[in-house]
Length: 323
Image (cartoon, rainbow, N blue to C red; front, side):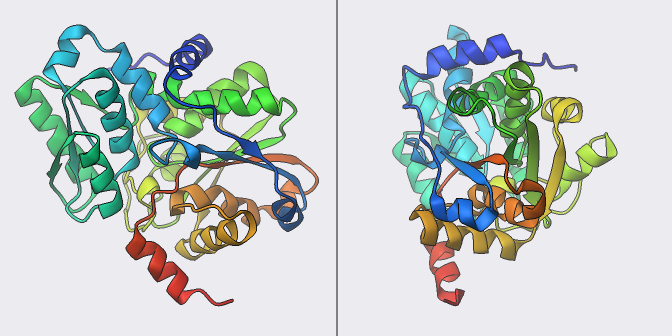
């Protein structure tokens, strides 16, 4: 089934809605990060949102758009955490019953936050794709609205509003670097830049140990691959049709980063800007360091997409760090 691609008008309408429920997030430039990359760097702090991650924007836009009947029947989705938080948060705002299927060994910090928002959690599967397949099956049986993590135009239009905020404050941006799990954030950035700043390059970044979206983009078809990364927000095995279609048209480049490079970026954010990031949120900085020569002297935005790292993972990272 061909999905309708969201338009720039959809993004503008999403912005009008979302501003009633979420604060505008800061876009800060830090001297030490500028020196590190030898560029003028702007960090978009999506980690400042109430859920600790950018996806809350998409959840609000999608849940609000549902029919009264769909809202009454409830929604069901699958997630490693941040997508679940966004759906749980939006469902609590609009009084919609929500069930989230999560992998059995999910981040306990995110699990507690989702439960606090009133969503029902079902644990199923070792990895996200197994949880997703189960959620889709159960949603069909219950006649609930299944929310796909990527193939949802309203999700893409919603998360694209952060890119709109970036370009409003920095219209002459040369490069914007954004993480890719399902691809809603990167495809949203592409839609916005094409409308307001066509010469800006959008560069996607994914984990070397979960390169499904990267390989799908590179091969121009949906590819399934390994999923072995600790970066929960990047932990997908494949590309998704809607977001890949947009990325194929407008994405400038796609970078893979190692687990060690993301951990180093987490530590750099803590040291240089005193901000906490999860691996997915730190991956744009990791990618920027990898292509530092290409960024020299340019205006670059890095999307710090989220800070929902577990205490266990953070303690491990700090324990093995050498100063």
